[in-house]
Amino acid sequence: MGIYLPIAEMSVNIFVLLTMGAAVGFLSGLFGVGGGFLITPLLIFYNIPPAIAVATGANQVVASSFSGALAHFKRGTLDMKLGTVLLAGGIVGSTLGIYVFSLLRQMGQLDLLVSLLYVVLLGTVGGMMFVESVNAIRNARRGVNPNLKRPGQHNWIHRLPLKMRFRASKLFVSIIPVLVLGAAIGFLASIMGVGGGFIMVPAMIYLLKVPTNVVIGTSLFQIVVVSAYTTIVHATTNQTVDIILAMALMVGGVAGAQYGAKAGQKLRGEQLRALLASLVLAVALRLAYDLFVRPPNLYSLSALGAL
Amino acid sequence: MLVGSASLPAMAVLSLLLAVAGAQAQGPVTRAEPEPPANVESIQIGLSTDRISITSDFSGADLTIFGALDNADPLINRQGRYDVIVVLEGPARPVMVRRKQRILGVWMNTQSEIFVNVPVSYSVATTRVPQDITDPINYRQLALGADNIYIEPLDKDVDTATVKEFEAALRQLKKTTGLYSERIGGVQFLTQSLFRATLTLAPNVPVGTHKARAFLFRNGIFIKENSAQLVIVKAGFEQSVFRLAHEYSLFYGIFAAVLAVFTGWLGRIVFRRD
Image (cartoon, chains in turn purple, orange):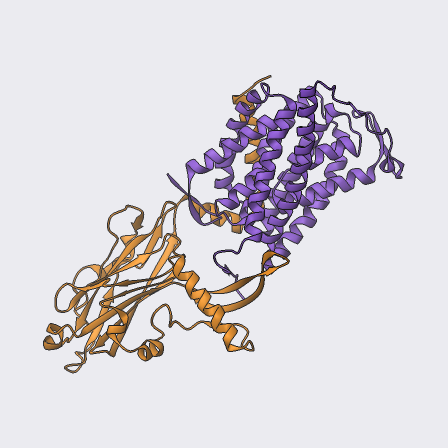
């Protein structure tokens, strides 16, 4: 059954969108990720213009992160203060990102940058995760106890000025790295249409030394607000948020996430991570293929507004 | 005599707003103007409606335009020496053509050229193969056909070879996307003077004012042209969404975000696990 996307101005198959949403929702429930980094490339593979895929991806992330953030808020595993500081950085980063986004769109280089960012980020994160999880699986087979190396208590980040106390996280840390991290994630959110959890969570654990129990809730909180902000700003500056497209993805996604979470409980952590890593690498390779292989048509058209 | 009707067969995807048709489509109407001198043929086309609204699930359709020849010479007519070309030209918009080049192994857009007044769509129906109707020179003079419509570059200082290359790419891309189409045999004579032209409306046909033009040729010589206007509008829910997104973008953005929050919350209620 065809459905017309009013902003993308094209007809697509509703079942493909629902399946796409459900599949990504399933994976995001399975791995505990937002899924934005899968939705946007999938939409691009489905010939949705990248500018619309990114802005709509941000909108979809709001829905998928909100239910998670709500759960953590009720359980009290959410550091509001840390989240708010991250958020302040995130808003600045997102605003800057949208500005860069509009500029690149005018220059005709947006598609290239979106693909490049995806290839580099997904390639790096996926590669690292893959190596780590394969090592963990090997160690488990050999019967070696996983070496719970506690990373050094203090690093250069903890020597920066402007310290602030975050009680829920039992943390006394400079707000500079927190703001910078928030801004970097906000920037990626607006250019790539991702929540940024896949970068935020490791960064919070390894750089800021935030206790693991509050990491996910706090990052989800920041992601919800920054994605909502990004959606609104994309809608006002670029008019690229397709609400029909977002809705189809959200409905599939919300349902899929529940089954994913159940399936996730049956799989082991390192196997799960190895699977996720392979998936991330596959998406990166597919995007890289389009960048490096001669396109079938070297020319492209873009309609211009009134001159 | 003027017979006017635009019919869109099969699929119910096109809903015709017949209200505007008025007196024109009420059947044969006697022309008010004086009778032209004998043996000067003229051509008339008519549309039963000057407004077509396409709905969300529009997946392309055929547009039929009826027309008639006036003062046709019966002898030439019997020999089949009259030819008609009907064109539906979409609104003109500026277009940027970009070309990709390999830089450090990556294919990226480098050169670009802007053309002003490019018809977004252009569909043609002819009685015969175009080269059998008249000479290429005539087509060029009339700016008739997807390869002959005049496309003007914004920057006139660029060397002609580059402009030619980008222009050719533009026409080619328009043809591949189905926006520029040609139907040989799309115009058929029903009687000696009455003809029917079937044109292709692409699924992504642009909204706006389209111009239907009919060209009459006798023995390869251009005789007369006639035109009519047709407005294509988007209707229904999707159009409201589009308008909202462009005219009240802040409100639209907030609504999209709130809707997402609500969906997330609803998902939690429906699939509550804790």
